[in-house]
Structures are given as structure tokens and as C-alpha cells.
Image 1 (cartoon, helix red, strand yellow):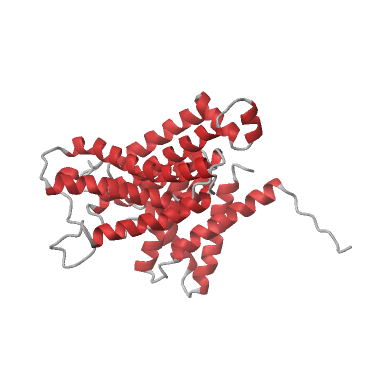
Image 2 (image 1 turned 135 degrees about the vertical axis):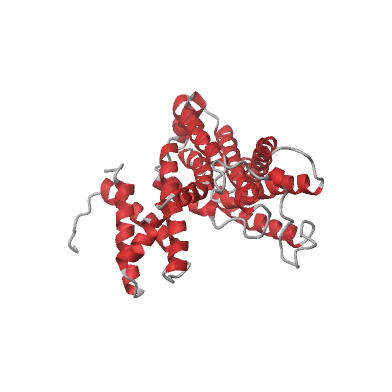
Length: 344
């Protein structure tokens, strides 16, 4: 039943969604078809689904590692933005300096740039937690706003395109900074393969290495970890730096891939959506892949429902919230048996 809980939660979300469509005066069956089936209709739709899943997989993998280790990183959105700044800054430098290189040579460089920027931002959270025992939930969340304002300052100021009609954006990046595409004519890039490889590497690290076992023991049983001689300081730094690096790579892929420039609206909330992905996926690397597909379906289905049926743009967020609440309810009812007790 624990394995079936995410499936039950998705079914309940569909039922609640049908009721919402009916309340909005729309045909529930037609709306559900647009929301749940259209994202899988055709090769282009499937590639767009994989493209949307790529950043969610990367971020959710890092968050799953943190949450298994009892480190509550809520600031993946900020680490994503800093990775976008790192990768976008590298692409902007290559563009303005007209540095000759192939996209395959730029590909590993943008990964490194995004990982370093995201890990550095998460390192601030690790330092505050390790040195001053600051709550990582608050510090990581507050740093999201700092990263957001820093990005706005860059695109409104020093990195602003002088010929961009005063829009807050950088120049369009050169062709040599474009991520290699999996299929010609489609937007899906080889960063999706990197995300799948990262999931495989995370599975090996968590379940086939001694360091991964240390982290998983230290999360639910910190006293046992201390007794065994495991370092809680190493766990904090390892989980946060890894999570930040993966979120940073996702941000770098987003600006060098489908966007092709840096704007204030790089993220559509990937860092927060990935939290739901991690829990829907049961904090397991394979589950993160499956969960990212479900949440990507919600994001794309919401956009299609808005354009084709005229439903509100906030519908995707509503579906995400209903999915998370349904999952929590299913878990509670699976692990605990409710009993009616009369008033004494």
C-alpha cells in the first residue's frame, strides 16, 4: 500500500480536478483529456515533457538526498537561480568575446559553471548551519529572495542588452553555447541524459556505498550515527553541496537550453515543485524520475488547458497542492488506522 500511495494520490487528484472543471463550467472529460492525455500526444509532446522533467529530476535528486539525511533544504529555487546565473554568465562571456568552440565543448563547461554556482549558494546554508546552528529551513528559503534580487539586478543593470528595447534581459547567446539537441528540430537537449545519469549515480551512492549508508543512518537516527562515529558536520556539507550543485546544473541547462538568454523569469518555480516530486517519488532516485513526469504533465497540461479551454493559469499550482495533500492523506491512512471515539 505504501508503494501504491502515489498512484492513489494521482487518481484522487484527477477526481478533484474533474470536480473543479465542472464547477468552472467546463466539460470534465474534455478538460481531463487535455490535462492528462495531450502532454503525451506525439513525438514533440513527449520531448517537451522530457524537457520539462529534466530540471525537476536534477533538483529532486538533491532534495531527496537532503531529506533522507534529515537536512531540510527548502532553497533549491535559489540554488537553481544561481546556477542559471553561473551558466548564463559563462554563455554571455563566450558570446560577447566571440570565443570559437563547438556546442559539445561548451556542454561540460556549462555543467561545471552551474554546479559551482549552485554549490556555492548552498554552501552558505551549510556554513550557517554548521558554524552557527542556524535553521537551514529559514536560511535556505530566505536566500531564494536574495538570489532572485541578484538576478534582477544583473539583467536590469550590467548584463542588460543595450539593444533590447529596455527589456530586462541579456543578449541572445551565440549558437556555440546552445546545448546539443537529442532530436533535430526539437528542443530536448542532452541535459536530459545527464539527469538520468545523475539518477543512476545517486542510486549507487545511496544504496551501494558506505558514505550513502552513513547519511541514511544519520538522518532518522542521529544518536546511533554519533555512536557509530559518523560525522554530522560532513553529512550537512555533503548533502547541501550536492543538492546545490544539482540544482545549479538544472538552472544552467535552462538558460543555455530552451531559453537561450538570461531573464528575470528563468524559473517557473522548479525549485519548489521539485519538493513535491521528491516526496511523490518516495525520496528514491527512480521515484524522482517518475514523479517528475507526473508533475511535468501537470505543468504542460495546465498550459494547454489555459490556451485551449480558457481555464485559469493557476490550475497547475492547484493540482500540485491537491496531489501533495492527497499523498499525505494516503500515507496517514495507510500507516494509521482511524477510530471513532465518543466524547468522555
